[in-house]
Image (cartoon, rainbow, N blue to C red; front, side):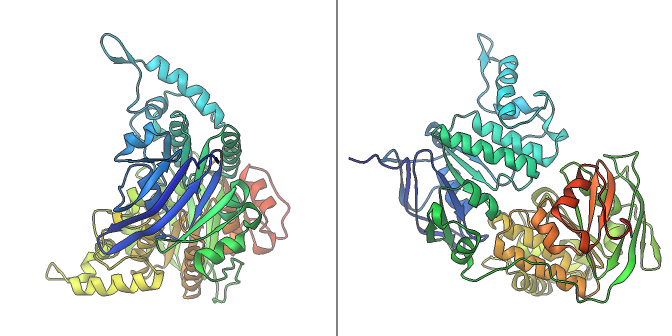
Length: 508
């Protein structure tokens, strides 16, 4: 008699208002197996995993662990079954320290007064951080860490549960190449120890590297599976989207106006002693690369008036701008799509329509009354243009997948006709098909005369999309590479503070 799979999900169905999220989905995971779950945004991947993690309950279907039917009514039930969940959106408390986050809700107590044994949780956290290659004091407050390190703490929390099944939903979306390598090595080690891992990622190189099998979902249904020998980029994409997608650099067809957007002496709160200057052309996509913590996001926030202690001298065309607050930047047509969409880019309790028009409500009002019909028209235009998967414009943003939420953030600024569009990790958590759509849109915006500044930690994205690449290290631009000099080697050399030999002077 053969040993049953560690996990089986049979005929899982889940519906939300106006949406069939899952329609008879089946999934099987063996002990010590790495199964990657792929699909476009809105395909049902996260919903399926939230059912396994006890966040949602299915309307139909059954779950089996070790061949025995189980009911997972809540997160506690999942934990008892040895299921750990690393969510795409961070689930940490920034006001608590690392150790407190790792053991949140499971703190060991000292009798008889039932006080938290802080000495023990700090001691137990140290080896977890070491397994992830993190050299951080366990009493450091989460809010003081960059998003990448907060993500690693979330992973440490899951490891502390000694999970038999570990769900990783876009775990590397905010990680550097080095941190990603560390995580993938850790996955291989956990696999050897018999831990089963369900891995969700839109970075197909990672899927190829770590997976034993791949299961693909499309529109809430099973769309096919790949064995280890069948796993490659083209096979995954074909089953995900049913069409071939290529990501190659497309030269700008726009009439480029050099030095149209001039930035001088940018100072941010993170690097108050550094002053950064650069120029960007009208009609180009200028990529910003660098390791996490290099100061790219902070620099852009200072330019847009979002850093109260920051400063920048900005010229657009021949006009010197005064930007003291975000409203000033918006008034001049300079828009920022932030990295952290849920906290900085959206009001998740509002609809797609309301989020789309929120920055420019005065445009849609008469005598102080909002014209809902005009709002809906613009929202529907962005839904169609960006292929946002939503039943209608009145759907609450919190009910959309992460990638479709990102499209809503981009759409609200596109509706206002940007002169300068700054995109901070624009395709984080977005599937390969939607990425191609975003890249095409960026190129079209540049061709129409906009300045596009793109921050990305995805090396492939930087090299395939950018006309030029500015590289930052510890708050400074260490070099700006022309297209002919854009290579992974040159970018990484500059990212660690070293110089490179280029065909033209580094700074425009």
